[in-house]
Image (cartoon, rainbow, N blue to C red; front, top):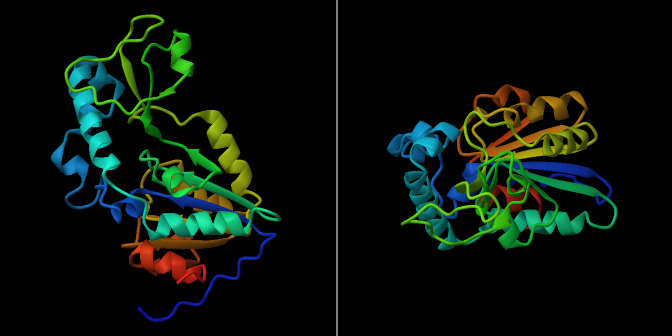
Length: 247
């Protein structure tokens, strides 16, 4: 790969970063929609919808337990670490927000701090009953629930992974915080995202309309490529450190 010109990010700038499955794929975590991804092997309706959970909660828990176990064997990569360095660089004067579609917590393990997990976290669990106070109180959970469905200690309803399933909305408060940051950022950098899942796929338009420099790092051109001013095709573990002057 030829030498890339470093992005002129200044300490007082505002940067919003969006990450998708592609950044975690370089740590060995399968993507969802790419060739060979999870939704080619599994039925998303049965495993990632409220209806699927209601029909067969144990099978859903087995699927997510298998993913928990696999993710725990993976480590943050050079792209995750580069984002930690960028956040540290901007800590005193600038503003940095990391918005992730990933539920694997690799950013936290790498050391990132200002993170919004818009699709939840696979290592959290909450009650499935929206009328229970436990529905609003997700808790850390790394256990593998392979043999039985865990039950809420408050109301007795089945517990579920604290992730956003198909047909479910993103937390409106999280989305409000993202939109605020997008409308005032100097840079919007998207990494490893397919550009097909909304509202995240529309973030580049909001940032671009506000005057931000919009940058994409991805293995291939996504559906929303036309909205990015710059596109760097290839592995984030190589490109991102180079763009940030860390290589």
